Image (cartoon, rainbow over all chains, first blue to last red; front, top):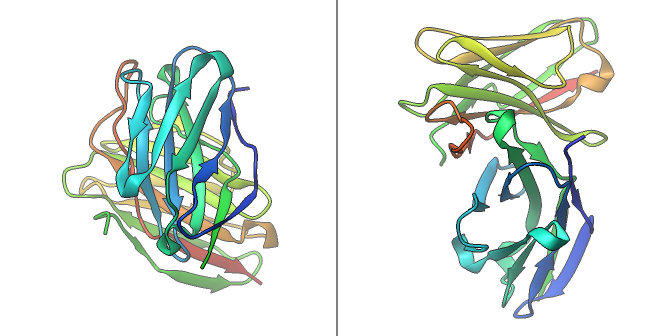
Length: 114
Length: 117
């Protein structure tokens, strides 16, 4: 079955330090990959997306992710964490034969310490 | 603000009851998607409608049904509710029908939190 795995359920960083949230997807056809963020009591917001163009994707709020086909990974990074980055992050995949159906990872909760 | 609205924001009901969740997509968006977010199952795709027609089905129970109306708003009906149906239900909308070579970004509403007692 097509799936996506987020390797950490919780990540804690200090403000100003780098962020790394890890994601692996099941290899099948050509995936489109996304990162969404969910702040407490809010809906989901798209951070960035990979759709077979450049493998290094830049998103909003300083986040970026690199698509690595050989590793079937799509890790999310940010050079310097901000307190406002504390939220739940979801790695999401869809495939060309899935129409618009999104397959979500289990989520990674990011905590940012002052 | 994504432009997708969902009502009600919170819903508390009892087992065995039936509820209706409502979603208004962004202006001009033809596709509506429903997702369920629960602690044990995470975020799961339920169903998609495009311009009034059902296009894709995910892990949607037979007790659940949905429809999209001519004005493009959508309703998700949940019946014979069980404790396990307690979850956050999201609606998302996108501009078109995502095909083999394209992806239409989905914009999510704030969700309806359903509590079944």
